[in-house]
Length: 128
Image 1 (spheres, helix red, strand yellow):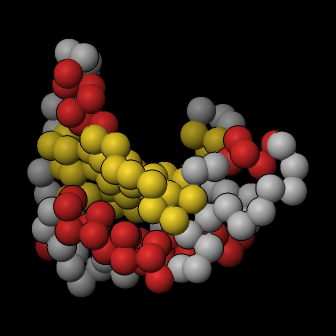
Image 2 (image 1 turned 45 degrees about the horizontal axis):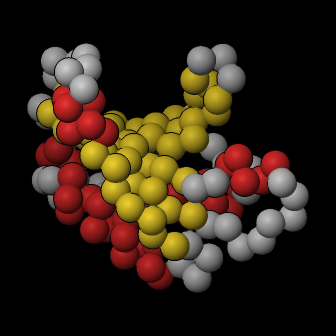
């Protein structure tokens, strides 16, 4: 996975897998993989899946021509509320974008290194 800074401000991680490199061929299968990982983690709770593609399409919004589907898996790792500011980092989201020949997965960096490592490992497990 590569770490970059989005819009000069937001640290994020991203990876692009060719479909031929993947264990799964559909976003729904990828989401089920993540739901299992969330369920196995005692700190994590699944919230929902946001269909970003359908939402944008319903608004007659612009969707890049090569994007076939785009969903965000929402979940939370919150095990405490030590200050008010920490709420701005929650919940977490893994973005899953399907292109013709690949999937792109991305998430914003969290303040907890172990959470970043968990999400990276979940994503890397998608490789066949």
